[in-house]
Image (cartoon, rainbow, N blue to C red; front, side, top):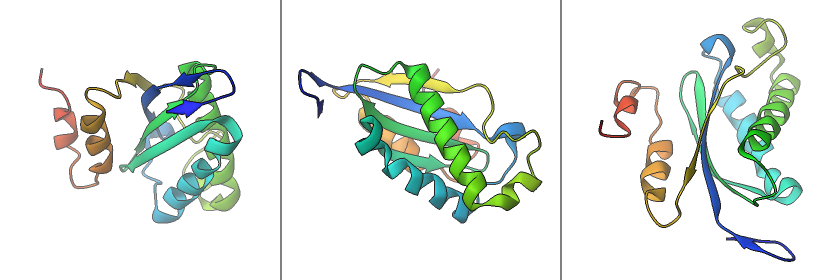
Length: 142
């Protein structure tokens, strides 16, 4: 739970962001830059990013937030700050992306119940892998 001066909340989100043009630029260095950048979000924005999962061309986040932020605002914060830091610390990434954008315009976001399928989502994010691209489609039985 995250507590502020006047409330306690359990707002959990699963967010998936895709690299622009689906370029496969997520090297270990780029992943480390994103991970290190996200560590500062808890103190600065009360966004507790609890799990990050990397695949070839997209990234999954499991996080907790105060209700003062809409899902769209959370996504904008993550996208803008991580992209800025990736370009600053990994300038070669710009060779694969044109137009100065790191992330696509779209995103996936879902709320997650801390009392239900939280562990399913966390395990899914932990097990993101470059070899398991096909298995990724089996998150939900449809």
